[in-house]
Length: 148
Picture 1 (cartoon, rainbow, N blue to C red):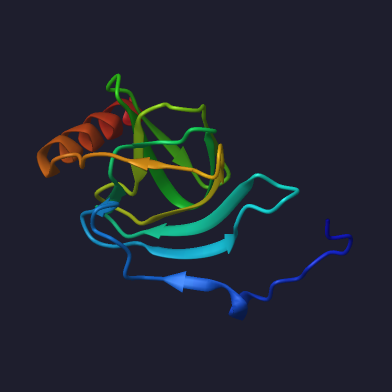
Picture 2 (tube, rainbow, N blue to C red):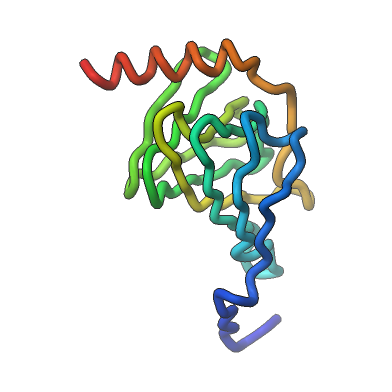
């Protein structure tokens, strides 16, 4: 096992701004891979910038995921129809195998650091997309509830 710290400079990080439309809808985010799982830490992390209207497909994580919102607002919805709004400084804790999606709303960009844990070398299972109408309806309902 490694016994010294490693500093990875900002300009050495891998940045992806053309990621798969099987994973995202409404446009494409900018994804900066911060680190991958290691022998001593069974998680990886990425900084994800979602322009307005961009969100993930439905997905699950076999060992869970934590989202640390760094800018704007991130909307996250679960299969039971609940949509929550997390703001800069908020943290979303998603247990293993919870079907969910997350991304920006209709009015502003959002950004989060996603820390995703691995189980048996796997960290995510991608599923179907929300329809555009379903997404807009969920966002509008969440915004209306948030304004109360």
